[in-house]
Image (tube, rainbow, N blue to C red):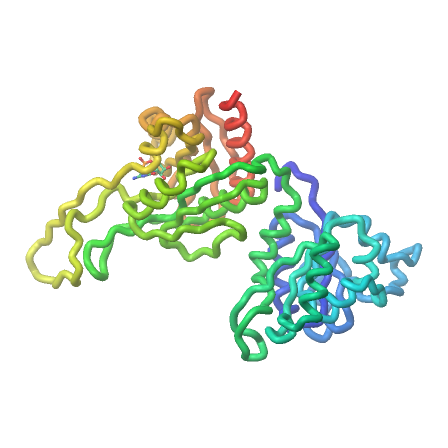
Length: 398
Ligand code: C5P
């Protein structure tokens, strides 16, 4: 979020075992450049200490309606006026009932009632509690009141039972909160993104792949969602959590990636090919494991389809953006690639600096020359890149 005023939110924590995850959520939010004022209920303080949350937020935590630190004794007004949003994570069944009724008997509930900003809640409770008619009634009331309900998710619960009621993971919540702070310049636009490597089987256990973590493609998907786009992410094998709200199609080989892209491309406005697609695959992959022997082994490789080049060559192509990771002569190779594949925009980076790392630096190549995006973490770069793409896409349409 360089060049942006630091957004400020209130993170409210209520009493539930998922409160231990709020520390991670706070860390992720501050890492994203959000300043956070933590407010905890009495019950929350039984699960996690204000000391932890103060250390991570760099601000004293508020727990008391009668906090004497506020000169006018109106913490509930002051804290809510400073915030762009109030996020309650975890939101217990009791707290949900309280705000559905409009009660204001502690600092956090009073703050919710006095707010002018959006309220987001991440429910967390046992599955029977979540399914209880009273809780569902309260949730319905809150949705009607304009409160944004994030989750809950399903899975193993702290009580040992399994089902709906788990708080969403901190990363998913941080991604949802981040969408509040970005202009919706891609609202109504459909974006198709490829990410990660492809894996081309040689036999049952061996294969050819490219080094790619998928981090840049996933960050671009996240940034596009934050700015209002509807995102389809065609992903090769990576160890990353999918961005919240993206439609993810998991593939393994270049041929599968090609199929998935061709199925979705007609409906999309912008196509961003970030995947490191294997250029070749084995001509005849063996179903069984090839037995080792002392003799040399020759593999016949055949070229894979160039997905991006084929999309760009369509009759009415979407706005196409390519990526080029080069180990040398970046400017020369990138511009060459842009012309060969007939792309309006190609994003170049130095492979040794980019692969697997959390940050990167990019150079944009278009008809007007080169435009560097200086080193930053991949999400910051992705947001800048999406803004650049949105401007060019709009310009292109005129
Ligand atoms: O030709 P090269 O592989 O270096 O081009 C890189 C760009 O082309 C990337 O955007 C990549 O996602 C895309 N590409 C593709 N299909 C291939 C090879 C590359 O879409 N088979």
